[in-house]
Image (tube, rainbow, N blue to C red; front, side):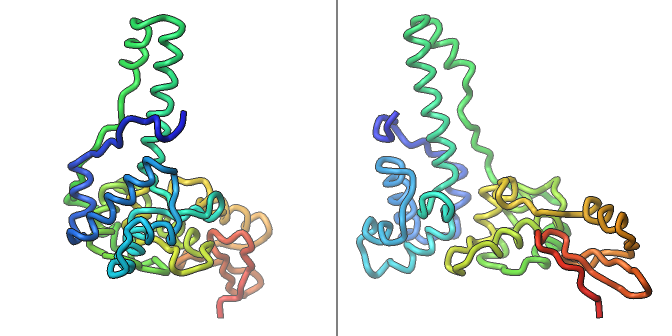
Length: 256
């Protein structure tokens, strides 16, 4: 199915208002224009294309800000900025209409209705701030190498998306993710990264964390004596050593 064949762009108003509450009216307009363009034309946009779409030199800075705040840069694939929720909606509707056409050919209208009834559209969940886990967010925030964007918005996203997650693990995944980005301008805001649940993506999972690394070191004669930031601490031959928890090329370093 071509992109143009999808009838409309779903907009979950409660989620949209919550996620754009910090934007001014011009920034909201830029955001709407970019997601509409991406939906009707293609599934990605370059920075240069976005500036041409907005077509207002006075708002070039705001356009770049919206790209970094709500889109992620697909450096491995298309080399364009993409919107994760648009990707999900596109995949859902593509599958929905494909099944609908197939059901119509095979079983007529009754089969189509049965297939459609089984497919539930994504449910929008309004953003709320739980009363607990504030300390977990502070642990997460304090361990970040780069704290880009609003801490207040990041806290809202963390409490919504990471309520049951280990804050140290999430911080390690985020730090691993940003270290792979060569240009600083492509580093997303922390709130955006959390909101897109990028910590679930396979390409940003840490290489080693916790027991796996500890057991590996024990097998080659090192004794585990504790943890510090992103390192596990060991002792051997009356010397102290530390090993990074997630770097693939982790080298045992003497803890001086």
